[in-house]
Length: 175
Image (cartoon, rainbow, N blue to C red; front, side, top):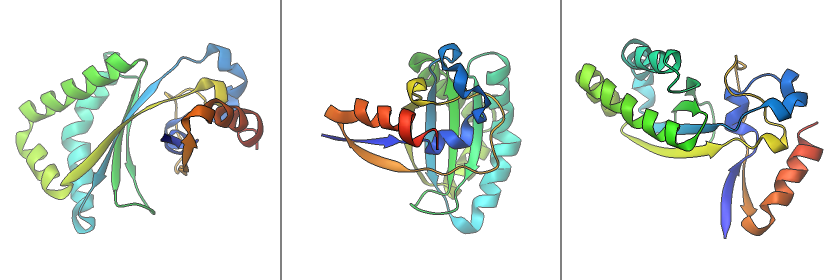
């Protein structure tokens, strides 16, 4: 069986700088709930405005209240059909699933017209939940991120996934 594994990619965009790589023992396990939206390119700037004006206050409040650790809205510049990604970070699977559902409900109730407009622009999406593996050199997921990230998705043999993690941590990551 083959499993897609994000190697450094999505998390490069939402993770801390390499200054804490030597502090892996102190890092917590985190999960990222990423929703990849396929949007109409000629109207995606309107989708960005809707996120900023109608969705952002809810996500910021969820961070303030400790429901999620962080969130980001990302633009796509190459590869694949998706144009935007909404990423939320939480400390455990239950929190990330609960927060995702609660945020969707809160936004639908408070600004249903914004949700409808957004859905008209970004008519389809795919959801993924990623677990960051601190054993392979990932940094904390809640501080400032760089202006750009680069994703590489690899298909790995599940029976040898531990070896892929080891190579990433010992060989590729340090480079």
